[in-house]
Image: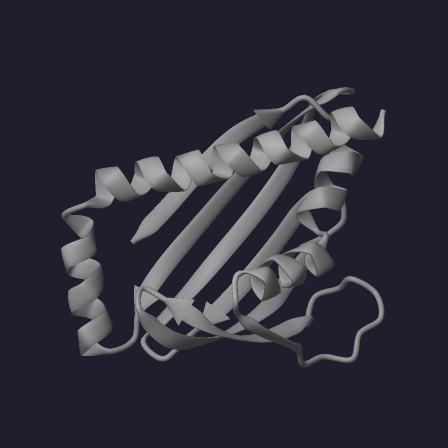
Length: 155
């Protein structure tokens, strides 16, 4: 199952990518929502190979996720591999400059079931794919607006 969204942001590419690759803000957001976050690599700079273990309540159950940054291209691309008990996901965040002051962000997430129960859950989720796409697009639109507002505040 795949979800994707494209949003244009009125901010320069370097600022947008800086926001997209602000991993500390993602960690603090997860902590604020009640998740436990553990960084399991020893890198001091942003690079492929960064890894996190996350435990948190999701859909009424305590779940564990391992996330690895598998590709990092400054000002352009972030690729993550996410693994949990029954599902694996590849998430890609791409950014490109439209003009000097406007950028485009594309996010794609592909979910792959690894167990029979996960396959059944994803099959039933396909029935609600339109609704899930709308929610995914809305959440990403909200995040793009957050980035744009941060840029406007910083000027």
